[in-house]
Image 1 (cartoon, rainbow, N blue to C red):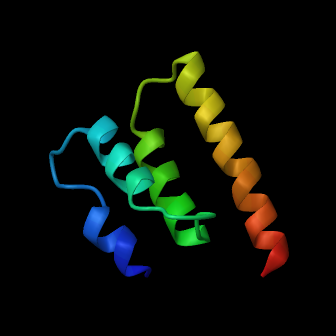
Image 2 (spheres, rainbow, N blue to C red):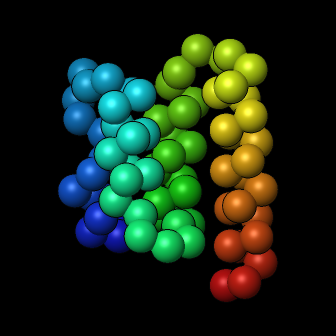
Image 3 (cartoon, helix red, strand yellow):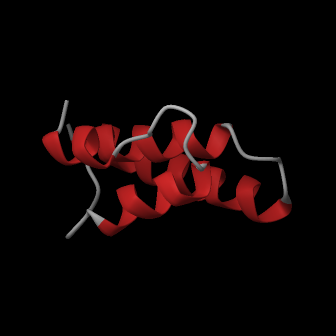
Length: 70
């Protein structure tokens, strides 16, 4: 696992919104598959608002592009 994801990952009982911000803030360039998966994991725990669904869709799109380049 990418060390940046491990360091900035979810805290047990933590705030999912704060977790996603920490992960996103740790990314300097194009996210790795591991970083994208970590963000998706946090987003899946949030209420299904239109904004959350759009973020999940966008990250899944990025993930599919990353997966195609590997």
